[in-house]
View 1: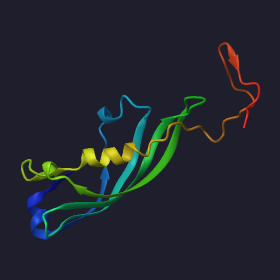
View 2: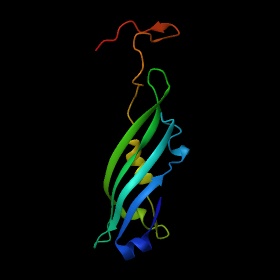
View 3: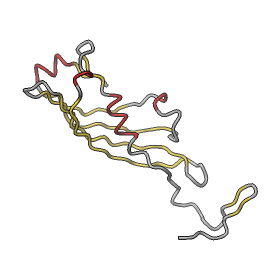
View 4: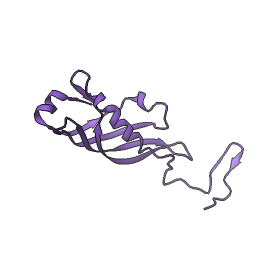
Length: 136
């Protein structure tokens, strides 16, 4: 997701309401099967000191492996970003690339583990093991 800094400098504010597609290379080495319905809504503002403020809400769905059965599990997330973008980000060809900043915030919402709500705890077993009793 790229923002033209010449337009931002002239308008001082750009509203964002977009759908984002994260390339598979970003999460292929993580326990994320896929991402879907990632929506970004908010604004990017340049203030009088030429500082760029990113104020957005990101929502979407992780598709993650169940920690018990490895079956796909939908995990909805929502994160708020209120960030001042460092100056070294905005010098390249009058464009600001937001994908890395957005991805850092999205991946921070990835839970350590998830399980399907309909998993039956009584009959869980594998090769050489069986769950006898769950301790709470």
